[in-house]
Image (cartoon, rainbow, N blue to C red; front, side):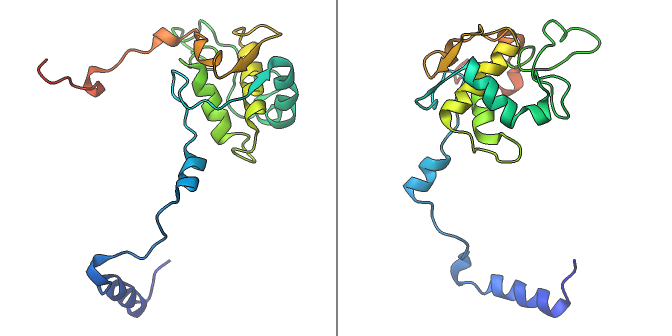
Amino acid sequence: MFLPRTVFAAVVAGIVASPAGAVDFGRPATPEEIKAWDIDVRPDGKGLPNGSGTVVRGKAVYEENCAACHGANGQDGIKDRLAGGQGSLASDKPLKTVGSFWPYATTLFDYIHRAMPYQAPGSLEVDDTYAVAAYILRLNGILPADGKLDKQSLPKIKMPNRDGFVPDPEFSPKISGK
């Protein structure tokens, strides 16, 4: 859409005429607002909230919120495949799934918690997020059928491809004097 020159000129004049280049958009975030969005989880588990979830509960939550996109068993859905593919990364047809590619189980929790389910991102309760993560790890043979996850156990899971990532020296931090 194009603005008539007079409107465009008025908008530019309004921006230029603002006092001392101040921009009058929004306001500083409050500490409470920042805390509400400070939900990232690191590979070592820092940032994981209190709570827990089981594979059994995860299956029910998955069926209700995830299966429509990812398939009944994390396969054959209309969106990314979540299960299988172990041993395929070095093949002509690598299958990148949670079990074959992801290096950290904490990343799974973080992604589900912030971005899923697709139709309502961030709507799952913490316990249900742990449960879905447990179920997806079960689908990949990483957790037993009676498995349970919480902020202590999740970072301890060694994903099958944990050592499959090699740091690129170009992007590694430079240590002064070396």
